[in-house]
Image (cartoon, rainbow, N blue to C red; front, side, top):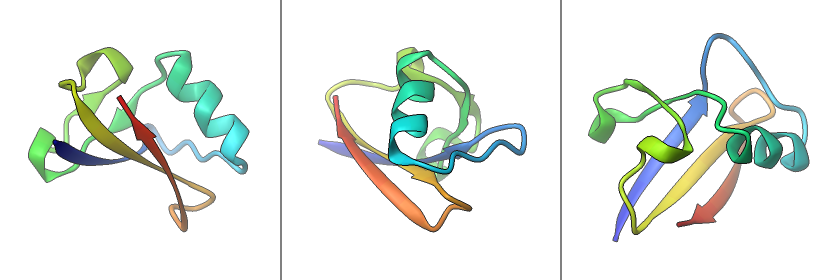
Length: 67
């Protein structure tokens, strides 16, 4: 299973786990990691099955989502 690490796109930041989950579920854009060639992606662009690490709180915290 692949693992991807995503950070909020366009200078956005989410302060709480609930905010980052809501953004992910609402198909907000995130910046992909090297495997995704640092492209802007959202929930529907990620290959499945995989594990997605969503960064928030100044990129200091990580939420793990399994798809």
